Image (cartoon, rainbow, N blue to C red):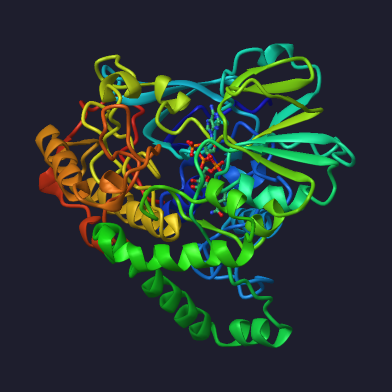
Length: 500
Ligand code: NAP
């Protein structure tokens, strides 16, 4: 007999990066086993699967940039490289038995709340599914942004984004243009610089750079972490607390002058040419944009085959890039290190709430979610790594795990009280948004004198959490009186929310 494919689930998750997998693991541990994860790619891993550019690594120490419930004593370095983080996520999916729940190559095209049936309808390119709860876990850095520079389509050479690196393409001996000087570009530039004939770096804004002090973990240390897990926990805690101290500076920008002085001294020690140093010296307070942590980037820029161009790009021609000063730079290859659609998250155009509005339509340019997680008008939706959960100083997994606590708290409460539908009270969400904006006043992100994607087009700090993660963890508890909770009309064949 042919098996009928299951199409309704208690929980549907879109994405299998850190947040999708973390949610699935925590849900299973709490006994919620009726779940499905839709993944558009052909493997788990999210940004750590996609961002496989040379030199890709994490600028937060691995002891902290990993699940607190799944420490990995085998990290090879203090700061892990992409292949190791990707392998860690694959291993977590297997170890915590999430893999059987995953539907690979299922792109979520649209999801809407069906008010009549009080459930989510999720359209994928491989069929339609329904779920009581929907968890977008797509991350803010999932859709590469390639700027629409005039003439780009006419370019006859090779062009790709750092998140879509073409490893079959040999850069040896090529004249390569890199556009962008963000956290990705500073990692791949030192890797490709020795190979290419000429590297022209098109810099719009110089970034503050601090050296990364990486170290390899000895076999003895790894064995010790495996044998005495408390040691690794202590290491994690000490990294966590040290990084939390940065928030004092972010919230009191004048304190950052000290850090800035150190960064300036570091720049001077590496870049001895005053003209190049001037180009690389930012004119905003350190921390306003993401601080770049790398020991290889600035040295690479001092090499003779590198040219840093600071004039804006006017147009791209068949074999060159022309800058605003009229200079034509000949190139064979363009690599875009230009970041992602963060503020105009494409996924948010395809999720519709009770009124039929999309998330982007309801946000009107200023994304908002109560505790970064739940959204009025979008019942039974838990947005992982949602608006206002980004960080500039520490591991986002800390924020994710706090969000998962809200999720599990809510589901357990609903199960106990036999409730089916939840959304935050509008006033609670609005007050929270206003509180966040108040907290953002005077911080380095709003007063640091830079232009960054931390601020949305309305000038609100909506992608970043404006405080310590300790403060978020403290707030991130499920409190029933902050939500509108209800029962759905009983229907035949409708199982109540059940933990198995
Ligand atoms: P990004 O930080 O958004 O940087 C994009 C770069 O491209 C910036 O230098 C930007 O200049 C430039 N740019 C954008 N549009 C441009 C245009 N039209 N013309 C010229 N330049 C343009 O992107 P990213 O480097 O990919 O990093 C994105 C995020 O990924 C980071 O903030 C971080 O959260 C994450 N990441 C993390 C790690 C890690 O180690 N944990 C590593 C890599 C990435 P402006 O500064 O002038 O806007």
